[in-house]
Length: 409
Image (tube, rainbow, N blue to C red):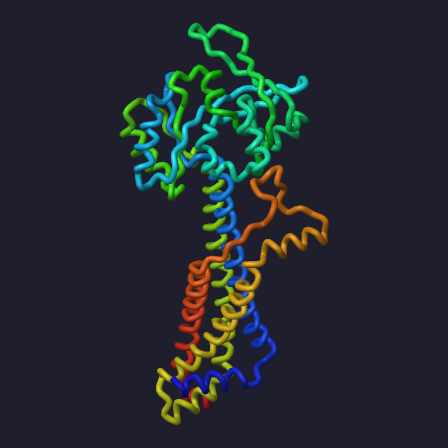
């Protein structure tokens, strides 16, 4: 192996044609670029998945069990304690949803208000999206309401303003009836990000249940799971074993498209950039085939001196692998430097150019997230290395087949 390594280095140092040098350089550059972009983009996908979990899934419950009629969850306190004993469940909170039109100074906005119990809601993750001042004001007002930032901007409402929510009334004969009107006072705002800010709000559980006619005091139970991605199966298991008929819902029904889009982009990125690395490895094949042609006489001399086929094969494989490993090292090193600092780099570029890459009014974040994962780096390096090795097999075998008598003729 030591002699093969010396031969590979000698062949690389030998003067090559300009075109061969260009092909060799392009293979190294292509592999480096493919590894760099693949690791960086996978880090971005990881960042979006992290922000989805830490932002959207802190306001949207991982799962919900809610009654099929206005009776609500019977003895919901006991059911809450039983569900908390499930090892898959992190926390459980009662809630009642009120859907209607919010009215302020003649303007209307469709909203979905969630009634929460202020005594236990402090442990809810949604409180992370509410300032301490607004939460204190909300807790001290029985008719207080917290509205999404987009809702407040749309209506032009501010803290302390009185707003009305028009709740539709369902009659048994489906006849028209005037909506039920409830007056609430704005205690503060909620900032989640994206479209959620344009339709969400929080009010007190007792107020929401009373105005909605929920007899038990809670329409349903919100579940926070240790593993949000197990929500469909976990909710199915819990719902089927629940003592009363309930509807089951989990976050994948309402926000699952975001996660599916992230996974789809991840797969497309992996396939596309792996093909880029593979194309770069074809340049290794081309450069080595031309190198074998240039070195026919040297190979023939080595064979007449007694060099084994395995030595010739190893020498050319090592020569090609040097290009691949060099590209892998350069690309991976660049990605390891850029990916952890990508958010700050993009923010600086946005400040210089005066543009916004992600608008908080449209997306659930207003910055480009990035989270470097060791597994992504290892997989990228392994795939690129395997492709580089495979690219050297055919040229090395051609070198072995050279006949000294014909090459020296």
